[in-house]
Image (cartoon, rainbow, N blue to C red; front, top):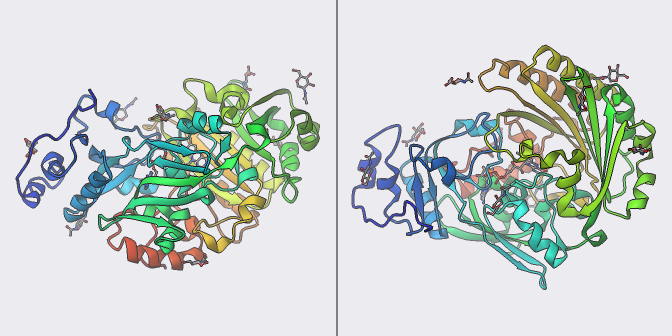
Length: 496
Ligand SMILES: Cc1cc2nc3c(=O)[nH]c(=O)nc-3n(C[C@H](O)[C@H](O)[C@H](O)COP(=O)(O)OP(=O)(O)OC[C@H]3O[C@@H](n4cnc5c(N)ncnc54)[C@H](O)[C@@H]3O)c2cc1C
Ligand SMILES: *[C@@H]1O[C@H](CO)[C@@H](O)[C@H](O)[C@H]1NC(C)=O
Ligand SMILES: *[C@@H]1O[C@H](CO)[C@@H](O)[C@H](O)[C@H]1NC(C)=O
Ligand SMILES: *[C@@H]1O[C@H](CO)[C@@H](O)[C@H](O)[C@H]1NC(C)=O
Ligand SMILES: *[C@@H]1O[C@H](CO)[C@@H](O)[C@H](O)[C@H]1NC(C)=O
Ligand SMILES: *[C@@H]1O[C@H](CO)[C@@H](O)[C@H](O)[C@H]1NC(C)=O
Ligand SMILES: *[C@@H]1O[C@H](CO)[C@@H](O)[C@H](O)[C@H]1NC(C)=O
Ligand SMILES: *[C@@H]1O[C@H](CO)[C@@H](O)[C@H](O)[C@H]1NC(C)=O
Ligand SMILES: *[C@@H]1O[C@H](CO)[C@@H](O)[C@H](O)[C@H]1NC(C)=O
């Protein structure tokens, strides 16, 4: 039976009285129970099924803390939970697929509004329309889209929430051919800070829709979102080429990457990863190439990388949704593949760049390798993903809140280590220095970071760009003046 802890009873206690019973843990049952639909659930951390019932968090680093979770079943439930929370000054955060990782979330002590019941998929291939619930993940859409011969820009991890990613932008392997995921968003239904259910699109609440496209975590809870679709490119097939190099080849590999700064076909994506092999005590590099064209043509487009002398390679042509099954020498398919294993501890930093500087990148890689040697519990990686920008730039900058359309590559620094270790401070210093070093020759005159990859220490002018903040702060004052939706890269009411 679906119902586990449903709210069949009517409660008459005064809400405010009950709320004041405990300053730390409000009685969620008494507060929220009256007014929820029968299929909604309230789940406490002490419940035996708590972790099985709620959508798990991918990252435990600077995670929010919860009194408990409410799993609404209807839009009206979401409205009710937002209203009761606002009335009682209880902080909340919506969970889509749980991959949000910014350290700004650590400020949240409140309730988890788990959108796990919002997973519907309504695909209308004839009209190129897709309407999904607020917590649908990428992998859920693989089969429906393949069956329809349609594409939508996805991120590179199949386990991420479509809505959570898209309202920040969605960058990834599809960006070169299709542009940003956010540019496929046509309308959303969202519950705003006042508890109203509103629609936002280019014709309804158009200002709000502008802000949702790039800063969407700031204005409400999206219960459903409608996207338009793209017909399959290259018959829906891509060629994935992995090239392995010893760390000693890094300068040559980064020189190869630089040759694509000003000239790259839209059909080509280059994912360059550098890490430390603790067994050999050496650096290693893997370049993953994604090519949306005939397999036999890929070689001519990656000559600089082939000339750098890979020591192993792996070429596979698969459906676009199966990239993860072959890329990284099949590494993403392991049961413990880090991108899809929940409950890990990851400390991440990132930045956007328009310019590849091999000397700087080599220094940063060197520093990460030396740090790894000195700290055996530390597992770090350093990625540069070159996503062709031409299609992204075909949408005018002013059309959405998305900040950095002219970005050429996403740089990411990731590390994991035991949460109890004392490595936090040193790892933060390592990556903050690395981020500054790469920024200095990035082609941006300030730090620019994709908001969905940001560590959380950067601030709004970095996540959204100074030029977008006038619009965004005005929208925040209008739609969320009490800053209820201000735990994930918050837009302030005023800037500076
Ligand atoms: C392993 C990994 C790989 C990633 N790869 C990519 C990638 O290739 N490309 C890319 O662009 N991004 C990528 N991301 C970043 C990803 O886009 C963000 O983490 C995104 O916010 C995740 O959404 P979620 O629903 O999974 O996370 P959640 O933690 O559930 O949500 C994150 C934030 O979004 C808000 N949110 C979620 N759903 C809704 C909703 N329906 N309405 C309103 N607010 C909502 C939440 O309240 C929260 O503030 C990756 C992240 C991880 C951890
Ligand atoms: C919370 O409130 C419900 C309903 O009023 C009540 O049955 C329950 O005992 C309360 N729980 C606690 C811990 O006070
Ligand atoms: C609301 O709660 C926050 C802490 O969560 C507290 O700082 C603030 O003073 C409270 N506001 C009111 C009006 O109770
Ligand atoms: C994606 O959603 C489906 C359907 O709800 C679920 O079965 C699956 O576990 C989810 N996958 C990931 C990786 O989150
Ligand atoms: C990167 O390349 C430089 C120059 O060739 C070399 O000195 C350095 O050791 C390499 N770094 C790693 C981690 O192997
Ligand atoms: C790491 O080094 C060991 C020992 O040289 C080697 O066997 C292994 O294949 C290396 N791993 C990778 C991913 O290159
Ligand atoms: C790929 O590896 C095979 C051996 O597995 C080798 O024969 C071939 O030359 C390699 N190709 C490239 C481009 O390095
Ligand atoms: C601010 O929003 C309006 C639409 O409301 C838009 O036309 C304008 O370009 C936006 N400004 C920026 C800097 O994007
Ligand atoms: C880590 O620390 C927590 C509390 O700080 C403790 O409960 C836990 O046992 C520790 N784990 C390990 C493996 O040391």
